Image (cartoon, rainbow, N blue to C red):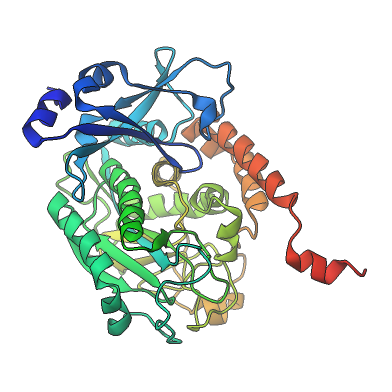
Length: 435
């Protein structure tokens, strides 16, 4: 039986609901709805003009409705009178094909039909910067190798504690917080879960972190590469596939040298096959490509991949296998769309299973020092334009994700690319004005 949001509001003291959705660019949109009106909104949805967000629509299109998913409800720990809801988009009585959460739910349904239940966890890195966005918020955070720096971590204890307290209150199972490899950079980890739950929590985590940072006079950014000399913001994703009931890990094979089953290797083969095309989704901004294969950072390593390879517990590869029964995809960055990225990964993995794709043998070298020793290895695209062109040519992903979502995404991202190329940079002026 569906949860009655009106009754829940009365029981929990919720006065307002944020009915939200994420557009194709990963921007979180919402309407604030009083609890007195939630009964009608739960049935019919909150109305939006699709053209006003990054969706492939026109001002002449019909109203779009965000129908809230009661199972996604999160009562704001820092403001309990507000409840947050993820919604699915509908228009003219049908789900909006080119919307991220709908795209993910369709991939989940495809996996479920084959007897699979996908579980994921994400590692969200972010910087705490000054409100003007030009520098990190802690002027004392200057170490060359600041990763795990206890002093720098504890100087930001009030912010980190408040975010972690919220996750504890919500029952997410947070288990560690740390200062990351760049000055001013942090990461907070919580338990893995079913892929839709993880995606909803990923969306909410970004909203929560930005809100709490703002309350402390700072700004949190998940921008892939906000500072050229520092390590960028990744969003490493840990993934495993279970049976339909979620009781047995189908990726686990303890007799294998990496602890992976044949199913896991085929899923991995699908990701390897489609990785360069998926970059357009997993690394969705112009800035993303300043993180991939970046020059050596102040700490000595970028911690980001530069080629389509996999390994055991080796962080220089695009995919590592840290322990039996799961692997970590290190390609996604902080700008990735939580729904669209997971949908793309599932689509690629299911294609790998369907066609029994072979990922090849793992490599155990240091890719940052010896990557040139590997022959016939695909390099990751160097610009958003390259990635978009590769996605455009990928018939499998277009078919599996749906032509509507892929074509709309490419169309809007090409517009963004053209907008970027129309701007003159200071570098261009300095190097070209006297040519």
